[in-house]
Image (cartoon, rainbow, N blue to C red; front, side):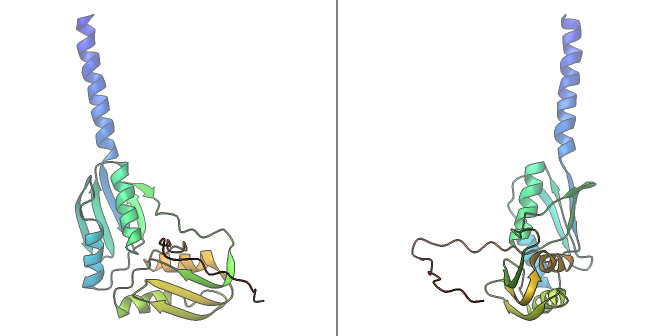
Length: 196
């Protein structure tokens, strides 16, 4: 019995080790908005100190952010950190597609005003890039961009939220529609009238 148990144990250990290594791999995010050195520095900072994430690189000219992830958790944490910093791109873990965090946009949501949050807007070129990205959105009449708040507000008639977010994503920007969390000292204003 001991004659078979050693090879069986060794085979099991090798299989387990291979499985753990198979989860590790190269993550590439292509098409990220990286117009200046500040964009590059912000993307680099977004990936700093994440457990299981090594060899991060930001190639501004190629518009690619890459890193090595030790496991699936490091992959999702790295992608979530890039999104939180306002960056978006086509992400792959080795050859498998990786999804960015959900944007909060409801399917077929339309409105006359939408505020897109957490957009990377470090410089005037970012502002121009975001503005150009959404200019062709149907129903759009005005755009208000606030660099400090990192928001892009779209005003018009029947603007499709998914179309607006998709336009920003194609330009390498991440955005979500969740309102900011309120602190305990803030109170919700009561809306007693409806405008039609």
